Length: 273
Image (cartoon, rainbow, N blue to C red; front, side, top):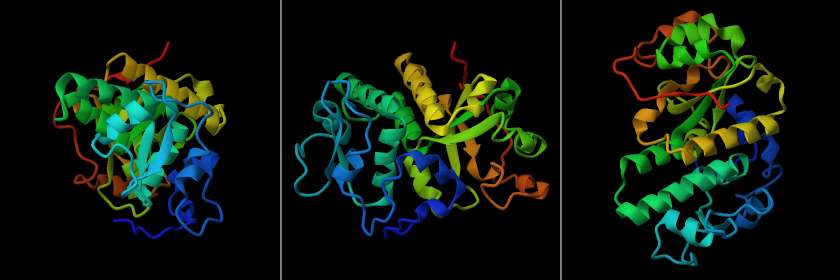
């Protein structure tokens, strides 16, 4: 469990945090960023689907509309309740990196609550898992994504080691998973959407990669393709080359972590036209 003490050098703790370099709102800060500072990094004009501007508000005794559920407050008033901790800090950063996706996740939660009430449905479970623990496994070769589907971890991480960063990559979207990577441990697992891209994708600057993927995820959600957690593929994060002490093949022989496939899932490879 990560300490809740603020550390402005958190980004040196793991390579995955390099993906946040375009939203560096923490340099030199001695305390947790204020809600106003976090909001200052949001895309201009970002609004909830209801039309209200997205803002961050402290989750304390001044929190407006306390009778509303978290997702309802965002949808109806644009207010993202935020605490001074790692979980909510990373959530705020993901509103910057994947704004269209976050807006659509919220809109689908709100529509589901309106239709079915507050008890979680399979769709809301899936939306929550993506939002909290999601990653995007992106590849320009479909065979690499098939290895994820097949749980062929040795092939993916070891035999195809040279492809990482050139033909395949892992992009963080879940804020709880980012929090876990402050103090990673053998066993840390994310839940993946699989995206096939053109080979030119990996030559794009990080910011353009994020914009593209944000559109892909948002469109996938609009099309109703995340109906349950079975639409997401388990993914052992520490298998990614250089994301752990994994420079020897024996690491990938740990079957407790790199598990064999034991059932079929309803995971599809997203191949945008």
